[in-house]
Length: 403
Image 1 (tube, one colour):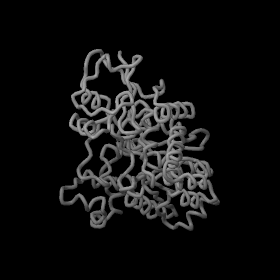
Image 2 (spheres, rainbow, N blue to C red):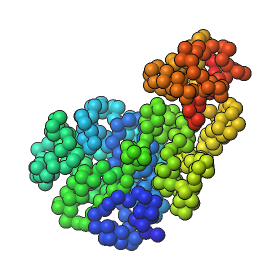
Image 3 (cartoon, rainbow, N blue to C red):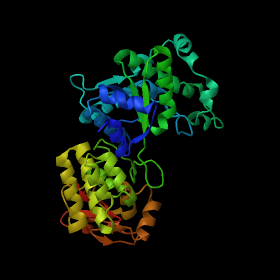
């Protein structure tokens, strides 16, 4: 099956320039393609995982991924979808974030023997000569057309800096550099990057008089259309020190029923027909599909051994109602602590007022028993055999032990 047909069948594909030509090129040649990753944090997220899955699928078809770390563009920040200017970061922080991105990507993609390439656009952006760049690159961008794009137009009333306006030029320049350096013929990215990607596509075609291409894929969204990737503790990270394997398992296990098939298709390597079969299950049986989804995602990201441990931990609570050494564990100091404070301390809630609402709404269990008293104190008597199981709803749980 052609890679574009596969991307369509699995639900990734959004749009592409000269789709038929691109499909033929990908069928005949081993194509170098790239996706950019601005280093805005010290870990990739589940949102990035869609891009990584696309790169992995492309590589399995013999194409060569270029993972472009945004050590230069991160210093400005992509204004797409933002209401204000991104907070500025130091070079040292950006460099460390990019280093961690590279470590994580190396778990998923093969960068050995020319099978894949890692670049960092700081190598050509941080020391650009402004006058030369403005003359050689800036003259190919029409400001009136740029301001009509949604990525900029939505910001005009509140204010858009020239600093941010330059982001498209720098990202477009990346494509030109990668074309010159590696004969890269395709840039890919999420659907929200279409305007930025077309900027580079047009620039390379104008200045190098060659056929290059652009493709975008769908974003990972919830049923209400918002981006997927937030838990009760914030972003869902690929670094297990920031989002544990058990947290990731629970997060995927808790997805909405209507999204199960889509997530199976986009976030796992299970056969297409198996994904559709699982996604079509109804009632209680859909939970089997969710468990498989959670296991497969954890297996790809953290390995089979850790995925099995997370599966066993989840089953220990959901099916047997007992503790497990594989659960997320929180170590609590000696002494008393209020239940509301504890819920907030372990990240189940963002505030004590939110914790109070959950307790009074019958959503919190201590050692498998519902609690409704927001004034409840947790002390030595709360622990059974040295541990306490705190549960939020039916699917979120933490094992608490004394120091």
